[in-house]
Image (cartoon, rainbow, N blue to C red):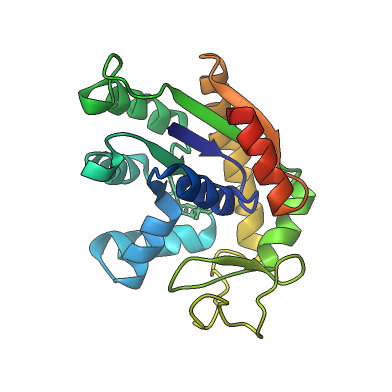
Length: 219
Ligand code: ADP
């Protein structure tokens, strides 16, 4: 499938996008994860992105478009993809249209139509979720200290790595990310709604229930 996930920070889009990718065998392409990897590897991109991300602002469009263009050109993305975190601005969405409409993703080559899934979660729930979120730096598993804690104190259930708290998951930066979401990313949902390809899903509730709603909405 060719799917774009839109959801505010802490809406669970990363967790749900990973599950969908595992279920359907399409690559999960998460720009936030790609940027965090660049930061961890201390690349030129990582050094440029780190302070922007920590503040809760968005990384410049031209950088992000370059990254996604390269990623979508890789062999594993030719049949389908689940995009998580891109596009986050209307400029990115317009550019993605030209990438997807040309080349192997273009119409008439048997690919699934592009679809958009929008997870709806109210702001007050989001701040609480992100501040209590922890993740595994090794495998990317996501935990929540209240609703989905690790079995052993602060280490990953899968590989035992010490869990980390993302530097941008503090209240100030979460509020800034929410503001960026409302101002820059909700217009992306409107852009796709005009094309009639958006399914909205209620993102409040246990992860399994939300996943069921997502699967139903895509069936
Ligand atoms: P969340 O959805 O929880 O905010 P992500 O992991 O998707 O987290 O993104 C983390 C940060 O990475 C964003 O706050 C932003 O700074 C940067 N980022 C990720 N994707 C994009 C994008 N498409 N455009 C601009 N910045 C991005």
